[in-house]
Image (cartoon, rainbow, N blue to C red; front, side, top):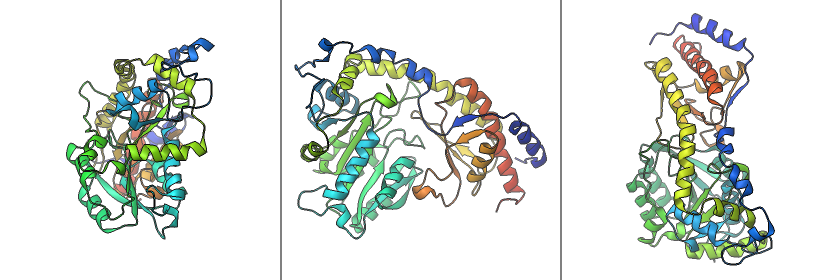
Length: 418
């Protein structure tokens, strides 16, 4: 497609003159989604409501692993058993950070060195990937190694080769269902290869961030093979730390989260947690269990979210299809779930697109956020987050976004960008 750079500049300046202030930078639930969970606020209303099914007074100390009702809720969400679950506070990211921190200070295997005592610690990082995963590694000075994503998950030929030959590689980040930001769900073969692969480091761990396990966008969702049950077939269940939360089911600021793992890991984690805390917010756990008494209740809530979110994804795809089809180097994902669409642009244009959008009043996720250290060598990926803005704001943002993409591509075609 031949782009008229002068016409696009005129169109862009007209957008910029409107003084818009629009935000598509993070994958947050919208106000409309949050409003659907008002019943959570009244699920526990008096002292008599604060007693769990086993007679635990949730107002008091204790219950380090969480109340049974909350453990059952996560077990049903993840396809695991209650003894494999530890329930935390509102943030699974907090659990991930703490798990890495404990590994750095005390290791993950009894009798082996803490990770911080090694000369070098590396993580494999599937790209495009999640910036908050990368930020944890950067904070702890963990070396990050890019692994490209395929249509079935991380390139397992590369993963298997690297972990088999390099004992400094201690972990890998995974978002196995509706990956952030590509929307890819790991194939059964990929899951089995994670469970069965040989590793040079005996203390290698997979950080399995199952953030979008029930966040579907169609009535025909992707299927994800449960990795911990698969790992038991190979005796590798200690390898996996599984994380999930209700952040995008109920309230991100007041949800509940969990870490799941093998019995040996659960015992170790609880031993270490007993120094850190006497217990998480059990009343909030009880609220969630009272609202979601069965797994069907979760599915009903996610169907409500689907009806609120799906029109936004459809709107993005419609604009992209209408405005961007036929432009060389421009493509986008069509996920069955999750919170993002990944936009691929010609090389060395993503930062320019984000800057153009910002100057005209549209805030996007920074270019490079999808890669470790904020550096995408090809500068060709932008994470699009449609969920947070109201539909009418999204309708105003998308023409501007498409104009910025076309203008940057026209500049590229005109050799104004190297």
